[in-house]
Length: 515
Ligand code: HEC
Image (cartoon, rainbow, N blue to C red; front, top):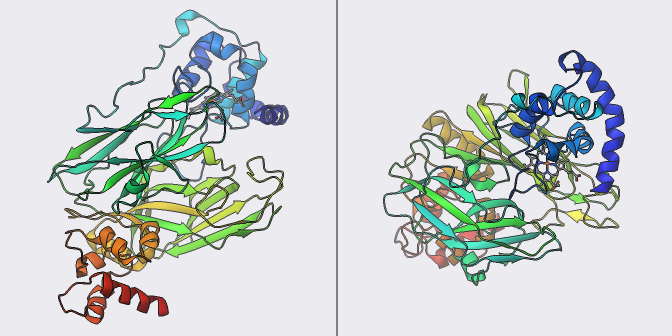
């Protein structure tokens, strides 16, 4: 932290000069806390900098802020705070927590002119925060079986808890709200579904440690919680069918606070009677060919895909691990135009976000999506977990790397939805399907990859009606298999009952592998 502040001081010396001149005309000569600074801090900082929240100190009173005026000038000018990584001009996002150049210059001027308090009459009321459920009383609340102990010191912990849930017949999920018990230690949370029962076998009641999420992510923004984020229900027209017997898996990224702590998380689930009437596809851009030599400073990865139908992008979730540095997603339109979708130029694994566009981004059929990532595996990268650096390859563990972005795409009609589903095949890692009244709603590559070597597990993953075999419809859930499902059954259904059992599926998989 201190090293970072020293850097900050250097940056401030150069930066505040430039920004203060540019924004000069708009900033008062003598800003005061009550009139100018408090409204800004309350809006952009207080969500995390208040008692019991993730930040290590409060920023609610003049004293709190005044004694850190210089430090605040430093971290804001370097854009370390507030943590919002998306570069302005590359996507216009809901809840963007980014300070303008003017606001940064104002905080600098306030610090440089003695951090005056000002007239008490100017002080706005402190912001109000809901301590209870933001979306109201949930229909079902699930909690950890028992509090989890987080030690005072040590590395961050990725802990997976299996929470069996029972969704009544005829009900669908319309929202899931995550609530940490102890915000000092929960850095982020991921909600996933495990329809296979595999995670349940590993959780003896106090969770198990694993960096890779053991399940399929919840669709859309329900998948991820980060501090300061507001809970949001699925958009109008969407809900999520829950398969009987599937488990909710909660992954917590826990950060020791310096004191022994305990964590008791809860998830509130909200139901509706309405099945989904619209389709939503989580589409992945991914480059798995990662092999970064030790010491390599700017290792580039890239992926592209072309949209087979008109699409609306509602959100984007970029993902790399610790030594990711830069991630950019661009849409190249068929008419030659270019739309920037997202750019993060100082990736920080700790501050990931599910970025939702303020308005959906419309992309015509034929648009090419381009993902470009840069990893820094040099010794100068303070986030490098290996010193001296080691060769790094693709994988799901902390010291492996990834280059991915998931785009939440909402087709405007079912013809486009079908064209996208067929054309994108394995690119689809999550899905809500219009009219889906049961089943998993989505099958991910990760879940398939884990199950594909084990036909009984693959059957459990896809078998909606629980008869232990795969029908044509169930087989069609495998991304890319929809058009071939009938042929596959015709060819491998040895006992001619119209479905594939584990032995028949084994033969089909063997044949597929040979091709
Ligand atoms: C999303 C939550 C969040 C928001 C919003 C936020 N902070 Fe922070 N802040 C943190 C956390 C957590 C830390 C502890 C250091 C870390 O984990 O990076 C921190 C640390 C700091 C530090 C100490 C930095 C250091 O290097 O020791 C300062 C100063 C600070 N924040 C100021 C601000 C200001 C000013 C704002 C608003 C303009 C703000 N923060 C908004 C979460 C937040």
